[in-house]
Image (cartoon, rainbow, N blue to C red; front, side):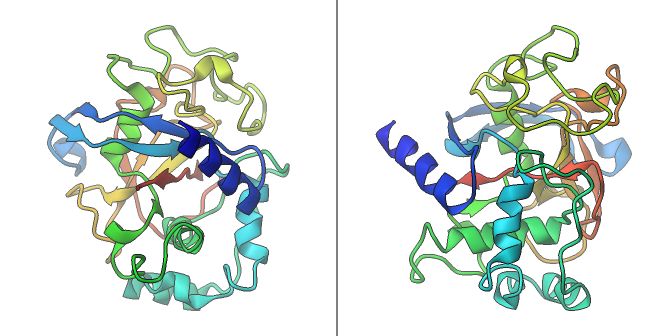
Length: 266
């Protein structure tokens, strides 16, 4: 517990408030079948314990990466794949976010950029001997896999929402254009998952590490990536707000309704 608290403080200093790690216990995840939509088969899967950021990555936090001379301008953080390097060579600058505010979650970030952010941040958590840019299994900070994301969202409850079966409303999630824009990442404590993670339904859909068609953790290629959680512009009754719903998107996309959160792997 003390280790988690000190790591939360350390990460918040590196980035910006608010930041907190939530500890996720090992357990099972039940995926619905997505083969009709090009995804993987459903089933029961086991997830080991890890930690995940309580909040989506904010404008202020991503801006630390953009403004750091050793951050976004350093092409090394895209060396995890040939496709990421190519993407970065064609786009030398980050795109501005769609919604301003230091505590508002960052939008218009591609999967490639979210991974580069994780690589940049990983350097502060691992020695050069342990952290290999070409091997994501050595990264102490990375995007959660689809299975990890769902474990953090639902734990052992049946859902379909992080808070259980109660319907979506304005106290739990930002969706249906109620707020006319995104809200600060700490705005909805009533919508917390069993582990205390916020915005796993609403505000922004979230990039996951794994591929849509295979659920593989390889970081190479242009394959669609798993995306989870509904966004601010989705109707409250839409199934995409449910924590069990699955879909994918090309990793190049910079969208107004996509963002990301990070995982910590010790």
